[in-house]
Length: 76
Image (cartoon, rainbow, N blue to C red; front, side, top):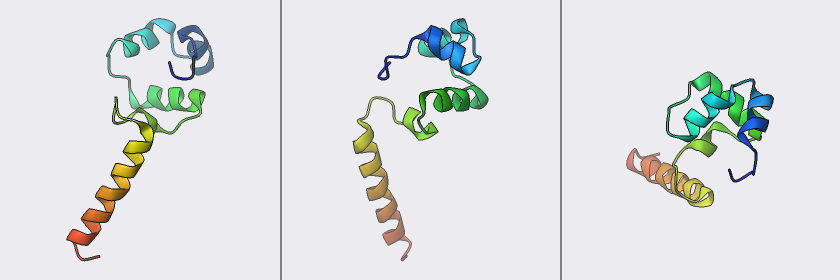
């Protein structure tokens, strides 16, 4: 939705039916294979779909902070 791509256009670009994409939009869990197709069509990484509802920049910052903390915990 952020890229303003219609379900119809995404269906054409991925080969996934519009009905299936609409099901995903309504909360049905997509297969890994289809998530890869969608990510490729939208030119985003699979990580883009993680941490729903959080700002993408905040997610990257949080992961870096968590990674730093875990390394410190294990004496790295």
